[in-house]
Image (cartoon, rainbow, N blue to C red; front, side, top):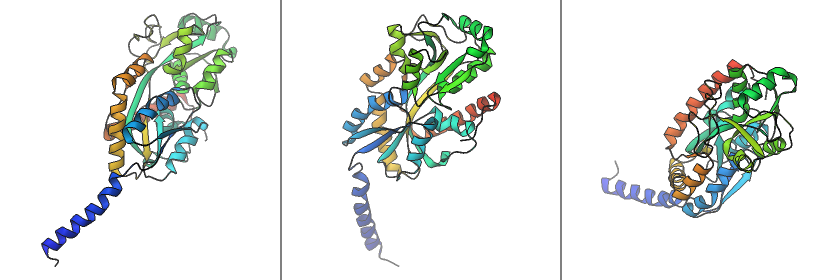
Length: 322
């Protein structure tokens, strides 16, 4: 049996050798994958926190857009990445919750990811082009019932929050409408500005500048209460569409197997950034709320969201092949 003092000395040496390797992270730039095009809330949130996160961690954080296939391309890229903390994803309600119910097959599974922390949660907003004859939800519903074949709605991609929010809206309001998916909120909003479809239920941050400039008209928000930023815009319930509270969320996830010390370091840095006064205020101005929950809390939240959206997808009967 080894002498206790020798065993302790050997243990101390092994810890000393292992310690610097873990403590050194990060030693090089970190890639933050955005599974959508520039201009949407996923991209906006990632770019808002990237520089401050880089300052906290002492290494550059490079935002890389991997748009397409309802966030599947970006999520799959992360799932295949080395679990060393140098590649993370701005995950969201689409690829990390809705997609598991919407698509019969996916190139990734929940166990492929290690949740880090929620970054921002936002309500959605029902918007139409300024030239639309619909000045209220009642107007839009009357239009949809009068000429259902001409009603279409855009989204940031199949399976994303705007898509499922519109499907839920159709269920609750009893109307039809053709879905027109895009590769992110940026292209979808641009198409609505060009009057390419009837309406959109967008994540608020990507539509907010156009609502404020008058180019888009907000008819209702999906929050439980009116927003201070849009005090004259009713909630869905106030507009006559019950049980239509939807919150979109965006948060960091790492590949499964990423060392706990790295996840914890990334969590602490991100929490401090999103709760800093300037970033929290920027989020509030967009109608959003800063996150910062623990990895365990974020993991439990994502599990709950997967269950919730499976019920909505099943009720809508819109599951599809990938």
